[in-house]
Length: 209
Image (cartoon, rainbow, N blue to C red; front, side, top):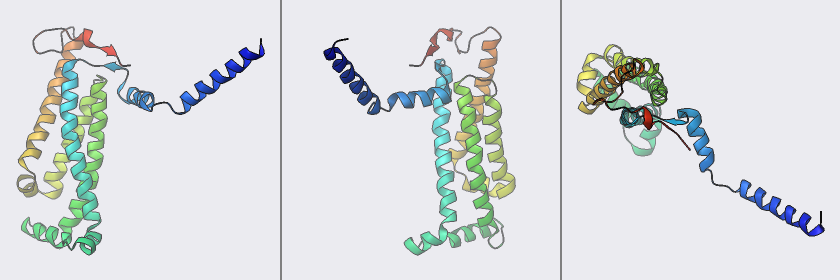
């Protein structure tokens, strides 16, 4: 091989090395996305169910994280902002029939466990996107445990008075859409379609780049 060709090969290798070193992180993000959600894009109905419930999941997860760290950092917030969080929670607990700091302790535990519950729901959403029939157990299980804690651990008064109308409607949407989609997936496996109008959606599945 001529000396000039050797130099050209070395220069090309250096260029390829630089391109690899400073390449866009997009391919890496795609690999992570494919690892979590799979390489195949599901039908439109599965996508709608997934994205709708993901928005609801985000609101509940963010709210519980903020609430937990607010309650855990109440002394710091009192020092920095002068907001008497402990007294506010104590007074609300008295109104709901709790004694002393019992409501504060229960509310802190409730938000901590709620974070775990919604983590389980998120795993169920991943399974839903991948069209695994097991998704229903994680979504319904996480939501049911969350509702059960708010009623039986905190109290029915907290569920009816302190949980907003949005909370109740959003939870109902998650449960109903999950049950409906489970039925549609079962119908698809039995030879039917997952659509509402009888159209086939199997051909919409395509490999993600």
